[in-house]
Length: 119
Length: 108
Image (cartoon, rainbow over all chains, first blue to last red):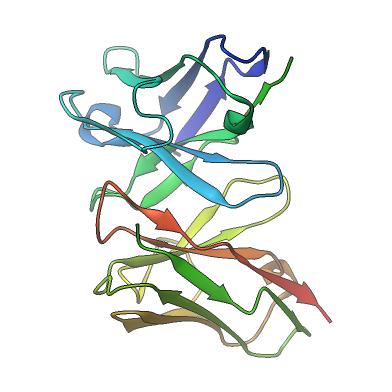
C-alpha cells in the first residue's frame, strides 16, 4: 500500500533554515507529481508546492515563493522541501501528498511533521 | 485567488441522520472541486473529486454534487466514524489551488 513518511521537522528560530524529507513507497514514485501541503495550528489547509513527476517543473504558493524549494530524487523515492528564511507564520504541520494523477488532487498523504518557528 | 466558503461552520447531527455540507466558490471552478475528511491527529483523506466522483475505497453513503460556484457533499446516513472535519478544495486555477475553511461535523 502507499506509504508516505515525513521527517526533518522540529523547532527553528526565525530566519533560519530547515529541510523536510518524505520517503515514499507502495507506488511508482517516478510517475506522479508530488506536493507539500501545510496546516497551521487550529487552521485550515494550505497548499505549498508541487513538483512534476520528473522534477522538471515546480510551482509554489505565493506565501513561500523565493524561500522554499521543492525537489525529488526518483532513484531514492524521496521528496524534499528546503525551507529558508523561516517566519513565525510558517509554523504548521507539513504533509507530503501524492497527486492523484489528474493534477492537484491529493489521494494519499503522509502522517505530517510539525515545524515550529520560534525564538 | 478563488475563495471557498463552507457552511455551516459546525453541523450537529445524530448517527443515522443525513448530512448536507455546502461549499461556495467566489468564482466558477467548473467541476474541479474535491472533498476531504480529516479526523483529529490524522491527515486528510480524499473523498470526492471532480465534484461527484468517489475516490477509491470511499463508501457509497458519501456523494458529491454541484458545478460552477455551488457544491454539496451529502452523507446519506451518518456512521459514528463520519464525525470529523470536512474540507472542500478547488483546482480550477492551478497552481493557485485553495481549500475551504472546513465544516466540523459533530455528534448531537
